[in-house]
Image 1 (tube, rainbow, N blue to C red):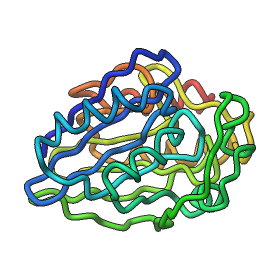
Image 2: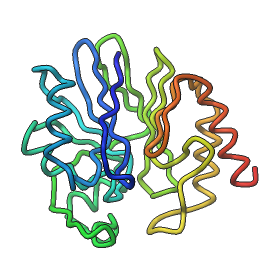
Image 3: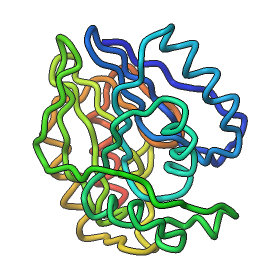
Image 4: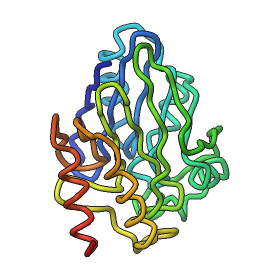
Length: 214
């Protein structure tokens, strides 16, 4: 399985990761979409003629979902998000997704809700869904049990954790989610913002717990 991070010139855009398996491909988060043409061109280059099978949304916030509409029109993937965050995407809720805060708008979209522990076969690798509420009620992480790659969204970053003072955020849930992630053998660490790491992902989770006073 290959992981490629799409570049963005916008500092507030979420990290966008393309996951290439031997059988399936996936995009994890879509950024704001304010530079959608450049993102789509980069994504096509990475896919190299292959279809985009899946899009996984780690949580509802606009810097992660704003580009989803264009991605759907261009590639027609199946889109997934944690059920609690899939609801406002299906409803086109620009308030709880913080679209209005970013100066954007969410249109109603077809998004399938995920359950904790669901597995997606990519071809030689499985992406496993881990419910990690706290930053939002429907935040998820994704874990490749073969390589140890962990995609954390805004649950935990290098030397930091996601804020909990936005709609549906919860510090108590975030702590529980970090405790859940500390049980995962995390090697590659791919957060929603900031640098990604090729190793020592578990140390970032422990630092996140210390940040939360645990």
